[in-house]
Length: 245
Image (cartoon, rainbow, N blue to C red; front, side):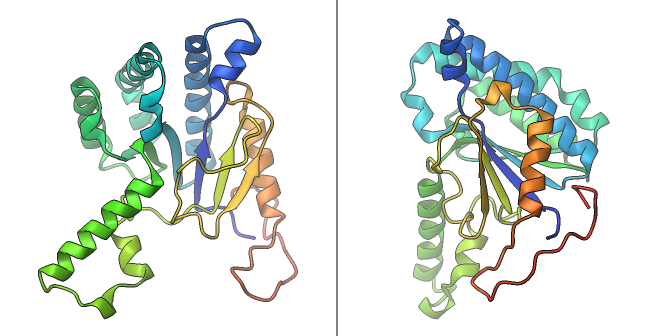
């Protein structure tokens, strides 16, 4: 098994982690942001090419207003604070999702961070912000329908490759491995199309307790699996003792 080219993480359990320790949910999100920083830096240093973090879903707007405000404030704080870290670690920053609905200051910082890291070629870090898998597929189909109505494509041109081309994550390979914390075993509207042949790794640990060692354990388990993509099973082999190739 080759090392994963793209790892996506559903960072779940910040609120439950905080409540279990008799703290408010805000404290859990603050601790979760620190874990995200550690995992991002670990991936950059390990040579992983693509990492996507499900940071804010389209459904998260339904949370209490003060919690949503805190999440936006944390995003602003860390985008400002970690710009140098991204550059020093050769990390290119991207987003997927409808960022136009985010607060203006967040939008400005996203634009600045993308521009300042555009030339970097190490870890390709993508934040899924105001992202939903169903909305992503719907958006792609609307674009394809418009092309057909304009006569630029025919019905015979519509295939899996064309749909993938118009997804927001078209600049990324499909995720090889999706990690979800907090013992929840569902996608929660994340990468619905892109995850058709992804491997999944679930852990009981809430996100604030997830460590770089836990991350490496997920990679190790992934490397021991046999990805068949519908083909006849083969004997799994490991090409390297190094988790990352």
